[in-house]
Image: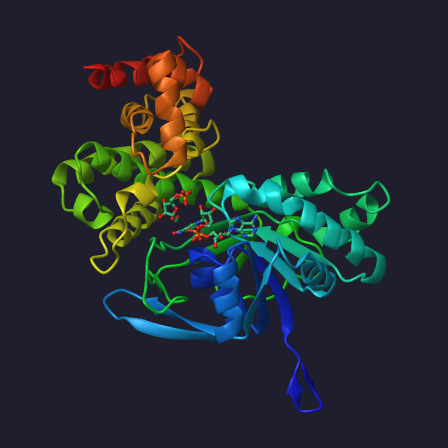
Length: 391
Ligand SMILES: NC(=O)C1=CN([C@@H]2O[C@H](COP(=O)(O)OP(=O)(O)OC[C@H]3O[C@@H](n4cnc5c(N)ncnc54)[C@H](O)[C@@H]3O)[C@@H](O)[C@H]2O)C=CC1
Ligand SMILES: O=P(O)(O)OC[C@H]1O[C@](O)(CO)[C@@H](O)[C@@H]1O
């Protein structure tokens, strides 16, 4: 929109100015005509964004490219809550990429902002959690509602949508001399559930509004993330440090193909995907993992084993669903066992899991972290795989 010669941009608030925030969601929002206000608790990062007001993204692949992203600023929500609440009142879209475990911590501030907004602004607004999880925006919504007054709830129900999303782009951990630079892979996919959105859905470059998100998110989570996690946990046991090197190991490649055979069979039966189309998706994923220009640490991809061992996450959920279909998830059982043995001391969740294993043993830990019932078919499959780690 143009007024008196100056362009008025749409306003986006994005929680989490990290790799996905700057290297994926922020970029697409700016390219779609939004000014992006990043919200973060890392004061140095917030100050640098406000000082530079722009950053670069390096897309690394066979045809490298640099994208310059402008129209960005940042708020530290710990020290400048008032600015955040004012921004929420005026926002045209809110997105997050902070990690599934952090959603509950941003919910109180989002609730405060929405409480203020719905009294003065009747424009619908969508809040999209862009995390590696099924139903992330719904989880955020439930946390937000815990902090809303009874008076605000009906208005928030009417005006504020929390459409769930699937996001896919590999952005490794990195330390660049240029502080805001992010190196990313060329591939990206962002699917959002249209049926949960409020108002007219905005056109955002790279965002596809879909009516059957569950199929998209399960295909992504149980192919990209299950495959990635399988490679990472197996590579860790072999002392391999990065994903590219793991993809040069024929045993690991053969293994992850077996995992994809299992998850593919579950997805094809459940959603009716065309097997040839699904196979293409798997092959694209395998190529992405073998990108020689990305240096992605095994410990990053394996991070958070407690979360990744959860019943609804990338390992146990497809394994359970395979069993329900009368199949045997042998490869997935091996990965679950390897995840229980991921003893990287630099990962808080790994330390917690290992402490539990040490005190209670693998079998109790298996039930404790995955919810898999003792004596069930999946329990027995994983238990057999755990014997290797007891020697
Ligand atoms: N890195 C990747 O390749 C991908 C990551 N994801 C998902 O995106 C999410 C973010 O991942 P990354 O960007 O890799 O992590 P990251 O660690 O690079 O970024 C997270 C950011 O959130 C900030 N943060 C932490 N607590 C906060 C709070 N209370 N309020 C505001 N900001 C806060 C951190 O300071 C950090 O800047 C995760 O859910 C991850 O699973 C999804 C697809 C790809
Ligand atoms: O970000 P999480 O859930 O810890 O898991 C790492 C995974 O996320 C990604 O960063 C992106 O999907 C993958 O590289 C990897 O499978």
